[in-house]
Image 1: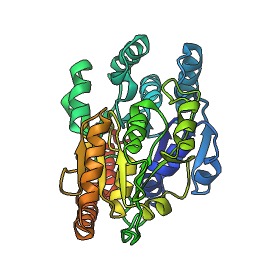
Image 2: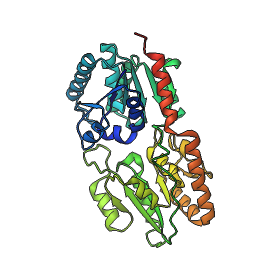
Image 3: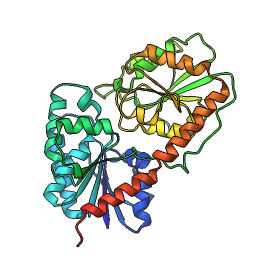
Image 4: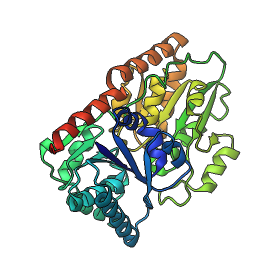
Length: 369
């Protein structure tokens, strides 16, 4: 069987789809990846797959570029004739489904989060919704990552019930992310791993951290890519001001996420909406309490009082109140939250669950030759 993966970056495949790719390779299937070249291209090629350069502006709104991307996908599908295509991220989902229709290739789309299409109103959102409606009529199957996203989406775009399902995110490799004891030290480190954009709640994170600026018991660390070209990016001046004022420590995107989680006491994610946030899964798998906004995606991974605390979205005071609650806990109580985090991912978010669901769906939608 030939399986095509389509995404907006090779980074996405490397960080989120490794287990799924290796599953197909281990069975002797041929895997091709359609994505733009980036610093992770050679890494995924080392797995034994074949990469095909497919230029894409992930957050751009230029229709000419998007038409060129669609034509490239259609051309590759016609030449390669994969038995099934697995698509990830918004534009890859939309244009893979459309290209698959023309090339008679079954496409499985993964809606990993509704993102700015539903959070930001305007022409861009309306166009994206229109494209979703057209494209997903042709998709072989559509996976969502939580029930709220599924219900909201189908309230705008009607889909047959037998063509939709819910995945527990991208799953987590429980052998790669293993529990690490919480550090025994005087300073409590709160870690946020995220792109530096408004919808991730970065400004709320910083505003809450201001309340603890003179508290030497705590440190706030933000790790993630700063993309000044993103339409919803936090400004460079604002980020630099937080750092210079000593409110947060900022680190650009790092490949040493496991080490950073191991050095932290808890993870924070004040996001406005998620699919199933990978960073929280990684933190939970390594046995860390979680603090997150009470929104779709986050509330599936954080069970209030069980493995962490939920706070009101877009409310820095609510976040700072839950930080104070966490600081009031004994070490034994924090360790119980940590143990519960690991238990939750073992029972619900093991990547083998995701792989099995893909296998079952592929068997159902591929017509026997």
